[in-house]
Image (cartoon, rainbow, N blue to C red; front, top):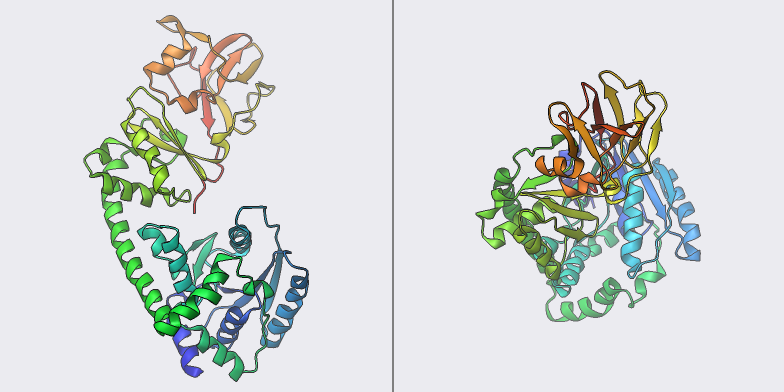
Length: 432
């Protein structure tokens, strides 16, 4: 048993100087043993645990108290978080999303969340993803570590079997929760665990070990593909003409010389920061986006946002950018910044007109008078400057009375020295 503790301690050596460790404590065997092992380590950061209550079973109402007794016995602080599981085609996935959302919220800056997934969990994950036809990144199964919220998620038990955890629990007289839903073979993972893996193990006793090892090999191959993707993306990450948009974007010509396979690999790596990746059938959207005419404005809709093309550049949009801006707003005190509903804020520099000011958005047919050029149609002016189409509908326009006097963030589109400065929406861009 001392050997098991030392293995976990060695696995966690890179995070020994973290500000804190936080155990995801379900109360089941795996997380109970993990918490017991960590509580017994002398050379570690401050330790606490968090239990997420999904409310999916009536019996689960007793689980927080079980976790509290365990934590009290080990001298560990416990947080209990109640979550609401959204109705979804997959209750397993919906519960997982709610759980990790709660973990992300409680993690402090630099803190490490430790979870109890073990070797058999890794093997099950790999087999599930094979059955779904996952690509290489999916077949990497569960990573040993990844970012989460303000900290990181670490799985220190992935090379340890469930039998080893069970022996440790029995040797130390630990008690744990047996979730009856884990026996329900209507759930895919439970079906694999209770029906498929026993049959595999009867023929190939080392099946779980071999599958977990294969996941490790695939993870190494995935790391090489990510390294290649980073190199390929360098030429596509040149600055655009509208840096004030603050949107993730790529320059398409930087990818055009790559083979289709390398283009897709680079895009998978880039998109993984923002959204769940599309399946094979949906990758036709990338071809349409890439091959569209330069004057077209194609959109590729993904799970957590959209890719928009403008000229030779593609932009990732999510959050406020996917909704329409609010109504026109009157600017009663133009000496102060004006907050715009769902559209950031604006402020003014230069000499202010005497008329009443308001912010509005394009309706069509607007025009403005420019020094030395006379009256010009706004649509043509925006076309000349190649302002992306997705920006035009939410680009703030400053009116003095009925007169259009300034367009946000386009310094030459103003009547006089007045400048309208727009700070675009700053909501999360769907980072994952």
